[in-house]
Length: 99
Image (cartoon, one colour):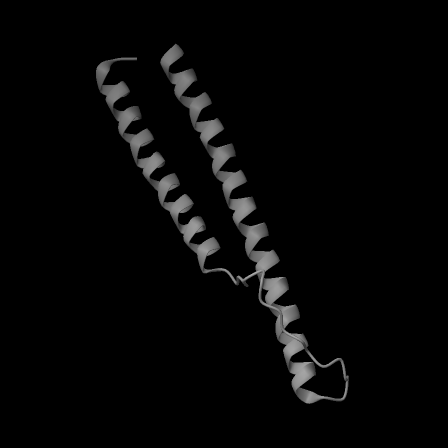
């Protein structure tokens, strides 16, 4: 590998690392924006199934839980994908430098 090829690979690696850093930052921001509740706060909801407010709140809380789980699953998948891509990129660089 000559200096020009090495410099090109290095620039590609830097660009890739910047993209990964942006994705990680976006994931962290998404986690921080997620629904959180103070552990010391307690809310009592009526369990009366005929109460429309109770039904609305239960539906809202269920939707929030599902959305939160979906967000966590998406972030886990994204970080796993990043890790896999970094591994492939390292192998590519290793194979290129071995030539």
